[in-house]
Length: 131
Image (cartoon, rainbow, N blue to C red; front, side, top):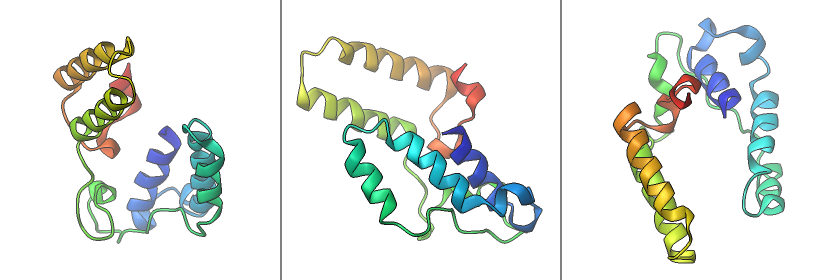
């Protein structure tokens, strides 16, 4: 995920981004996404979906654009907050197995993370936030 964030931030800088990253954004994104999708619940299907897409790199932002431009998708909407994503994940886990022993742990970890780090969109977190 760190690689995906790095590439997204550099591409969002436009011409000011690191040339080695921006020039190879497609390849870097594809490799990083492949690594992430190997961990999916259905990795073969996820990797097949990735293979079916030609361009996985984020669109280049104008050089004068704000550094947080990557937080918006192409329609201008912001990404969902961690609280929304994590709650959807917990709800999905509860639906599959309400009595699983990991669910209370997930809920507690979610609350602690939100209390300590704050609620942001996924692209606004940094590796240091997980330390």
